[in-house]
Amino acid sequence: MDASDTRQQSPNTQTPAELFVARKQRVTDAEQLRQPDRVPIHMPFLNLLYQLEGVSNLELYSNPEKAHQALENAVLRFQPDLCEGLFLTPGMSRALGDRMTHWPGYGLEADGAYQYHEQEYMKADDYDAFLADPSDWAIRRYLPRTCEELGGLAMLPPMGLLSMGSLYFFENAAIFAMPPILKAAQALLKAGQEHWAWIQQQIALRQRLESQGFPMGSYFEGSHCCAPFDFMADTLRGMRGIFTDMRRCPEKLLAAEEKVTPWMLENAATVLHVRHNPYSFLPLHRGSDGFISLANFDKFYWPQLKRVILSLIGMGITPVVLWEGAWDQRLHYLAELPKGKTIGMFQSTDLVKAKEVVGDVMCIVGGMPNSLLAGGDPSEIREHSHKMCETVGKGGGFIFSTEVGDLQGCKPENIEVWAEATREFGKY
Image 1 (cartoon, rainbow, N blue to C red):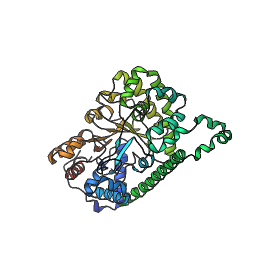
Image 2: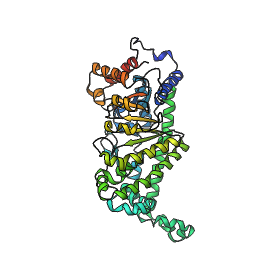
Image 3: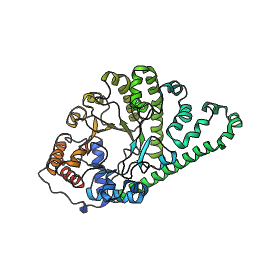
Image 4: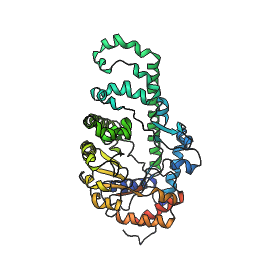
């Protein structure tokens, strides 16, 4: 790339509408493995916003207008090509008495960052009930375990009895007037209202940023899928439980993975229809180097994940896969995917190696260590930015982002150096 002309065009020489089109095209070109005018920069501000504003994280989550202003201030200062604001809303968790997540002011201190609280919410002896009637098990067993306000659902008769139609209600309708059931219904209504309000706020925020010339990321606002193995591990069996299952009841685990796959795909189709968002985000947690052996990867993980990814592509959806951890030993599996149909967000993988193996298969997102932005000096940041632009950015198909999807703890002056260096060295 040509770094001889380091003069930067001032953003003020273009209208916000022109800047928006240019930034959007830059990102789209990279996603589709084309060579844009320069390497695009993706900044997931998330929990950095409260640090920039000098307020608590709880205050931003409690005041959407303040959170939106904080994001607008950040994009105007750092000028990214793509940005992210705060992650979802704690309102739903509060409404449900959710035991699975912690938020600022809900299980965490005011400046805390969202955390998932992993437990064995599904016990080993639940497999038979799960496989026999997963909907009944989820409603009458799982939700009362995971959400305090939904404990009343355990009182419901077997859900299969609903197939009796009016006869079911003649016999059981009174149960819906019982206080524990009403409490659960009210909690679900409140959670739905919280989510609906958040969706409307996000629409307004997106329009606000676009009027300033900045695209807002859409990767996390479409459907969410995952590897079927991770489906069973993340919210059901937990890490210890799932690794035990591979030895003690492998056939039941494989049957459960087969069971959950069509649910994710049907949900992705529904979300695409309702939100018209062509992305599906797949965070992968248990398949990386050092987490699972290649033998178990071949049996329990990759075939099922590949099926999900190929099915999403067949539905016209772009899978945005977070290859969490290091995937250096497994990059050749990723090379089996169709060219130009997925976006890969990499955390600890050697991106120079990834470029060699899958650079013509998927758009690569990542490359900037959070530790460097937190504690590095400007010369180190410029040197690393230059290296990433020259190697991973070669020929296009690269979006420069952080290795961890959050800028919390990073120094603002270092972020500015990163952005300036990318605009300088990232030209094609």
